[in-house]
Amino acid sequence: MAINLEQFAQEFSPECIQVCKVYDWTTNVVSLTRDITFTFPEDSLTGVTISQVNCSMTLMECIEDGPRRDIECMVGEEIVTLQAVTLSKTIQVILEVTGTNTAGAQVTVQSNPTLITISEEVILCAPEGTTVSCNQTQNTFNICRVSSFTQNGDSITATVLVRVCQSIVVTFEVILEVAAKFCQPRPKVICEDECPVDVFPPQCPSVFPING
Image (cartoon, rainbow, N blue to C red):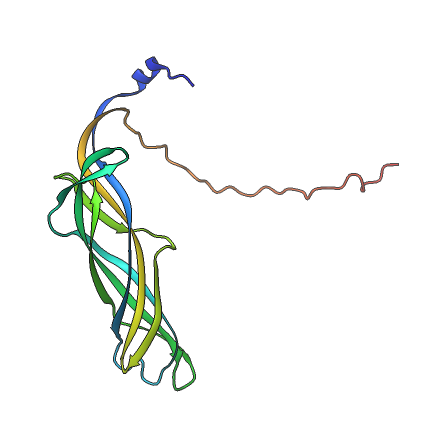
């Protein structure tokens, strides 16, 4: 559909807005296997026969660590200058134990949180002055699995596989001139209760009444 420029000019006017310009946006996967010793509340595992051990993880922090360095990369058929950025990531892991206590009842006990810290270098378009942010994506790709474990009193040492996908965004605040118009609040929605009106059930004129 063709744009009516005269109508467009009447409805919109130049406005300045301050927004975050995205310089780069990518994803990165942390995948690691570690032997971790988890502690549990005192006596919480006493007399418990363990039948199942699971774990859960959360990316608690993902921050830039150390100076950036320029690096030349071949992108397509062009050599471009990008930045190697080191990101320090802190992952919280919690172990969940399911078992049967001395009374024969099923119980579930959670460990105290354990933190894993890992650093990785990511190649980004991140010139000086930009901000690099990193967050965990929410999808089924992220996993935490226990392959084996040994118990020692109120602690369990488990071999844990952690895989977490992060969304990494490079931004810088800019001021733009755009063609726009100011929004107005919508009218108030008024809902009024009304008395129901009696309605006869549907009839069957082909059956009743019988004419003739």
